[in-house]
Image 1 (cartoon, helix red, strand yellow):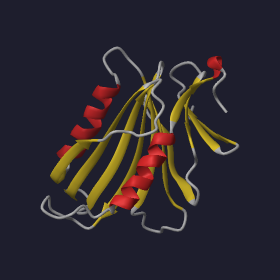
Image 2 (spheres, helix red, strand yellow):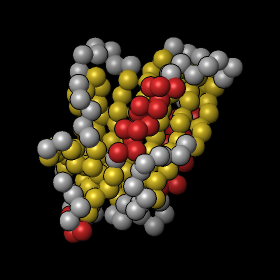
Image 3 (cartoon, helix red, strand yellow):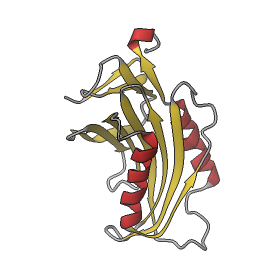
Length: 183
């Protein structure tokens, strides 16, 4: 069962695979709507698009995956990168520092750049943050679909837009109801 709900100004995402005490807490994106909410074999995913965007060029996704001995946050982010690398020309993945993020849980940030997706023909820029909770792994991603581009060109998403969304990703945190730190 997908467990996602809003409480006040927060979106809480938890997983049915582990204790109900741990949750990912994010500000819900204002002016965006849920376009996908599904439970997969070992994860739950929620995807957002701008409410007024008929052919979405921007997206936000939240994923909770059961933590296992053979799957930590580094390995999960490697899987995200490998899946993108397979379908991209002009591929690059660059780590980034997540300023202002809670340091209680291990967190990794990557900017994933795809000059041309072989399936869609479009370019893509993604900011991805992985967080390793006690029970689950969480991945929050902000993506832009853009015209195809080459590595020699400047990224088609402005530094200001990337900075804005990096701050959004940094606000996400994992909370634990047992520690009484959830909204």
